[in-house]
Length: 97
Image (cartoon, rainbow, N blue to C red; front, side):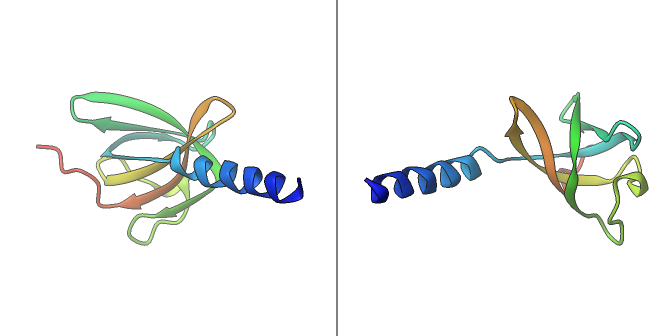
């Protein structure tokens, strides 16, 4: 029974990681007070909540408040509490024309 329980818990952790998604776009705006980022993906603007422990690596920027509009980024998101939350922001997303 213990093996079954451990296997089930391990499976839940693995499938939780599979729910992550990558979104490429250009930063339109950042609201550090609300911990949100708005990114233009194709022709559509999408706003995401940024997790407090999100890993940020856009050039030398390591903090949400220092992100600048116009930067191409790749967001990694996960579903937490029924909401899509940004867990990582990397430089070099899609190039908008």
